[in-house]
Image 1 (cartoon, rainbow, N blue to C red):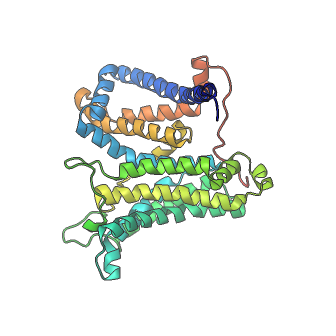
Image 2: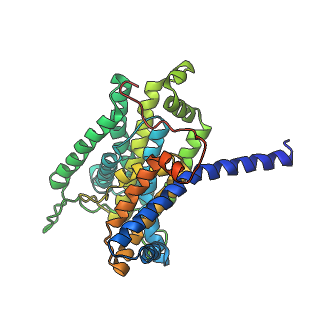
Image 3: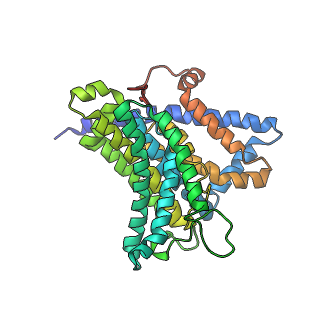
Length: 375
C-alpha cells in the first residue's frame, strides 16, 4: 500500500499538470475577449455592458441556464467527434455533414420506421432506435474517408470537406423531395414530425433542457475511458502519435484509422439525432447552425481532451445563448460573438503568440492533429 505522502505527491503532480494544461486555453480565451472588447469599443459600444449582457443571457436565470445547456449538447458531441479524430492523428472536418445525415436518419426512424414495420413502437425501443439510426448514418459517413485514408493514403481533410458537400446536398434533395412533409400547406424543406414514442423527454417541465445533455456528458466520459483505459484507445493514441511505432507494436493502423473515423462520425450523427429527437422533432434544412464547423474550434480549445472539450463546449454555448440578450440590452450586433469565437480559435492555434505575450516559457507536448498525404 502506498504511503499517504506519495498519494499527496501524485495528487499535487496531477493538479499541476491540469493547471498547466488549462493555462494556455484560458489565456487564449482571455486574450480573445480583450481584443473583442477593443473591437466593441471601436464600434461605439461598451465592452463591459456587452459582456455583462452576455453573462446575463447565459446564466442570469434558470431558463437562461437551461438554454445554455441545450446549446451545449450538440457542441459537446460534435466537439468529441473532432477531438477523437485528433487523438488518432486525423482531422475530421466532415462533422457538419455527418451531423446532418444523423439528423436525417433519426427523422426517418422516428416517423417511417413504425410504418415500415406495420406497428407502433414503445418509447423504450423507439427512442434508442432513433438515436442508433443517427449514429449509424454518421458513422458510415465518417468511415468512408477513413477507408480512403487507409487504402490509398488520401488526405482526410480533402475527403471530409468534399463529403460535406455531398451529404448536405443529398439532405437538401431529400428534404425537398422524397422525405418532404406532405402535409397540406407545407412549403418548407422539412420531414414530417416524428412520433411521440421517438421523442427524448425534457428533464424538467417548462424548460427545453432534455435528456440529451446527460447523454452527452456520458459520451464524454465513455470517450475518455476508451482512450485511457482500453487497448483500442491505446491503438488510437499510438497510431495518432507515431504510426510506424504503432505498426511495430502490432497495431493494425489502417483498421484503427477506419474505426476511429467511424466512431468520430457516429458521435456527430448522435448529435444530429438528439437535436431531432429532443428539440425539433423533425429535420429541417439548415437547422444545425454550423455545429460541425464550430466543433473544430471546440476540440482545439479543449486540446482534444474529453473534459476540456466539455468545458469548451459550455463556453461556446454560453456565448451563443447569451448573444441575443447582449444584443437586446446593448444593441451590439450578435455577429460579434462569431468574431470572438474566431479570435479564440486563432489564439489557440497560434499558441506560440500567446506564450510570447504572457512570457510563458517551456514547450509542451504537441498533439498531432493530422498527417500528410499517405501518412
